[in-house]
Image (cartoon, rainbow, N blue to C red; front, side, top):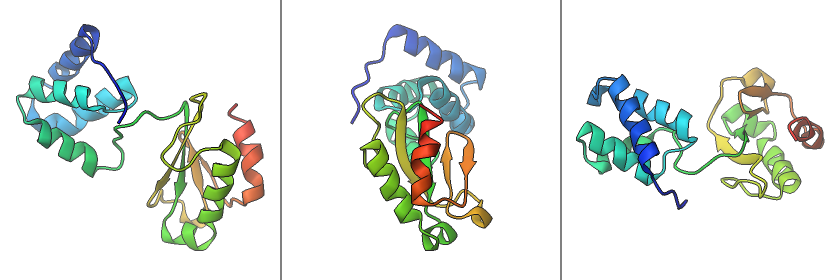
Length: 158
């Protein structure tokens, strides 16, 4: 678990985000998205502050955050890398792409490089099956990958 200490400025920001959605519980997903955009992730102290602002149990917030794959409770690198592990990508070698990334970045899936530039995760499907195997670096899709292409792709983001 990441150590994140919330301060008064953070609390003010969360309050403003909640108020921008009328403090409505029905807007929880939007509030979580906006909070993640601001903080980069949703650590427990941020979830607790949202719960207090919306007068909801923390368990409800945590349940939503942990259910949806687009929310994260751990920080991401400046350039988050997501490898698609959907059926088409998996069959066409996504595991070898992950291995090449782990070797190049010297991290495992779920980790962030020491310099904070890259994080590595796997997704179920990104909807680019015709380009399999694929990965995303931020919002950019890289397709028809071969393990030997990884070094060149990564170098473009350093």
